[in-house]
Length: 247
Image (cartoon, rainbow, N blue to C red; front, side, top):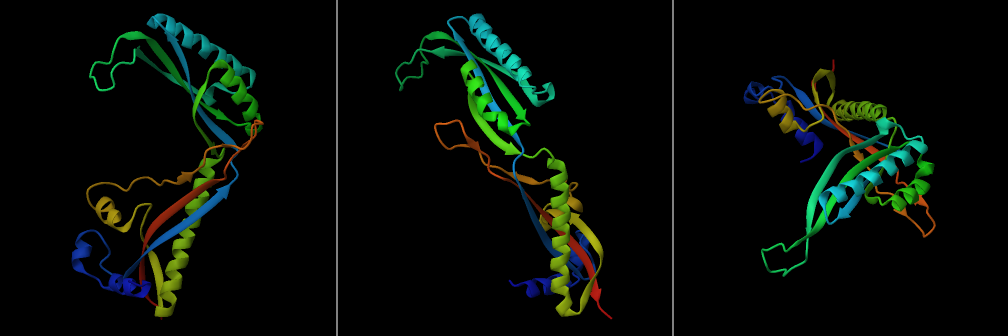
């Protein structure tokens, strides 16, 4: 269905729609979009440290010793306490490998205790050396991604651009039809059906959100060099404008 056919359908004031919370006068529904791309200026680094021993207390002692070394290392690198999360610990037995077709896990041969760390690194240039130091302590990396120090500000900017894009689309569509925007009826980050259900029906509109698309840090050679992909912040906004004919 082309844009003008869709507009025609929306211009028809159908009472059953009005009862569901939609306008009972002519309106246009527009999906605005915006994207901002910025170089990553922070890094989120996630890794585990693991301790193993025949007895669980010894495995715990091993992992806590490694954790203390990591805390000391991060302090030396001037990484603030607020940029370090290390709140989780996991403990589990390790079994002797048995018959893969048997339900019996086998004999317990020791214990594994692990702690998970997440670090926000604001000095991206310090990352290669930090990786080497963490690996030397026993860190097992499972997630590295780039981010933006001013994420909220970029999200707000993207939201404003998406709103401007929505209005631009509406004006472009209405002008050939000798119509104009009178006012905004509803704004939402979710789609038209959700506006009808959530905004006027079962619940409230979900809060504004932005999707952050990142790529993992890529190791490009044996030499410890890393390259961060740019961070893209995208936003969609769904707007219902009340409209009327131009004089």
